[in-house]
Length: 175
Length: 162
Image (cartoon, rainbow over all chains, first blue to last red):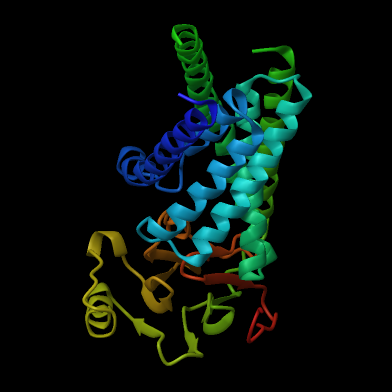
């Protein structure tokens, strides 16, 4: 397969996976934890994989496409939930990209920083939408939750990146 | 994990837990049994509730008041397509139904505090925020664009926050 075609196929598959993860996570975790406000951010695993396996450009592209598709298709989505996803996603991406570029951190702490700044981005957008600065007082609970959820998604991303790199190596070797 | 990872995660955790602790202290230290809960929908004041006794001032024709859960369900049936709240979920208190973007937002007043007991949103964050009578603990139902702020005694409410 040509390099461009292979890239497109991989991006399409990972975009589909991230959309499904995002929607399934909403439905499954509600029943599982009994706390719907707790969300792992499994779709971020895909962004991390692309940051480490492909390029920041591809990671950013899949992130934006996922937010757009979920914003239009997911049940209960509104312009407000779309703006919150967008602000959280952009803040998380910038934090992860900046940390990865330094080369000093592994994927797990990059994931934690992503989850942390995702919460910051969302609350800043909420303050803007609601024109209520007191919304900031909700932020600490989300920051505290972002650390364990970021570690978990980081560990999943780490294992996924190792597996994908191994498979890609084997595929290139076979070709 | 590298040492840098542990340091970064520790810093983020300390920041989060310190902020959590500070906000808890702030909220616990500023409770007003005689304050006012003001409810905004789309930035416009729709309801004021005096926390001293639960008496209300309606600023919108689509806001309803109920004294028990049967009354709440009757109002929801008439005005909001038959949605129902169970008596267990609702508990005792005085209830207020406010229109939200995704449907009705039901608020309960009890023991000088207000709480959102039912609303429609993907994460139900405001329902999980619990009761409040602190200006530092507003209840925010984001997808419904409903905000409940607590005013100190004597503090005037804004008719609009946008």
